[in-house]
Amino acid sequence: MDRRLLVVLGVGVLVVALVLGGLDAVDRFRGGASSPTALVDRVLAAADQEDVGALLRLVEPDERAALVRFVGAWSQRLDDLALPAAVVGDPSTPTDAGDALDGLTIDVSGATPTVGARSGGLAVVDLGDVAVRVRRDPDRAHGLLRVWSAYRHENGPQDRTYRAESFPAVGALPRLVTVERSGRWYLSVLATLLGPDVANGGLPSVRELDRAPSPSARAAVEASLRALLDGTVRTDATRLAGTLDRSGSDAVQLWAAEVATTGLDRSPIPIGALSTSDGPTDGVRTAVRVDTLRVGEDVDLSGRCLTITGTKSCLHPSGYRYGGGLGSLSAFEVLGRDGAFSLTAVQGPGGWLTSLPESVADALVGYADGLTREQVLMVLNEERLDAPAGALEPDRAEDVAFTSGGYAVRTVTVARAGLYRVVPGTDGATRSTLYEPDGEPSLQPFFPNDSVYRLAAGEHTLLVWAGDGFDATLDRTGGDPYVERVEVRSVR
Image (cartoon, rainbow, N blue to C red; front, side, top):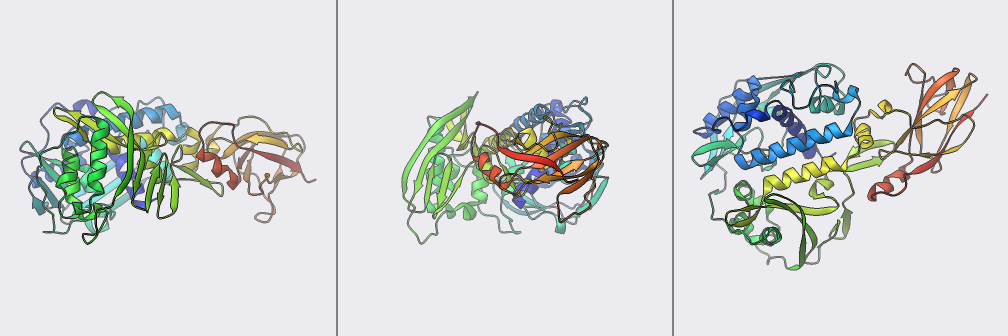
């Protein structure tokens, strides 16, 4: 899995857990702070005290709204998946309860916030010799925190201290990016996590620009794409920033040198074709699908496939990948939703603007919606917890339908104790494990040279993983399940 996606998701899980502990407190008091350093002082204090309401009120308003929507969607998705209690904790505990932070303790010390760089309404704040101690107890956690512990394969209490020099090298970390809104300063989560590493004194010019709204959502997204492909964005991000909401405007001015698509010594890339269509609409927010985009001779986007210099990549229905009996996550599907590359536009008083925080929220919501229960269990390496979906009679080869995660669980009733072999599937790549009635793995006397098990009489459980041919089924929606012939054959 892409390291940046892993870290962002990790931070996202933590933020989501904090949000779930106090969504009702978001709008009770005025948010932000009077200066960048005062803001960071409050951010660190809120994290140290695990004060959910205070922390949320310090987030940039547009990003906060997108974050709350993203949290609600992920919370609902987690409930809908109905994962086993061993993965999510006590299912009777509501995910929006005030004790959503059970099992998590954060201690912050040594911080001396100073403004390292400032331009207009944006300031990058250094944290100094900060130390963040994070303690997690998976047995006490539930919901997303419990799932994150399962993903990290944490079987007991975790206690780790992060210092500034050991923070994950993602975005502007270990600095925090702050922005000014109506005289108050707020934390920009997007600019902090996704922006470039801004050196002290090296901040590019960032200022509040006049917006250039469009008459429709599609027109707004098309204007943003055309501006993005203009090579002059490297020295003047004004045109691109004017098509975006305030949070996005700050971000592209901060990243101008990073998002430039061509060098200054080259002519702008000609756009051969650009077409869009309206996706789902929710109030003043509309997702816009990018159906066609041809740029020069090297970039060709058509439908769900993107070709760059001859290399073609296509969006799958989900970010799940399978190989060698193992499940993993791909970052590519974050770029699209429902099989299409898309951006989200928001309608304001003067028209439509492309929204960076809403686009990111929609992308992450779509990513979660694309994953099935069985795929999540595979990624967590917890497929053993799934219930058997039928029985397999010894010495009788049967066609076994595999789940969307690429595994199958069957009950195998052994009448006579002895040695039994799990016969490979049709493509010869199937892995399997047999479990005793008490749940422990069955004895393999000749392991690793043979898939033979010594089984006592009784009801056993077979967990079998599909061959690598299963991965091709992930590129389609619906249809019949993947099937392989499986047999548990007696040896003597």
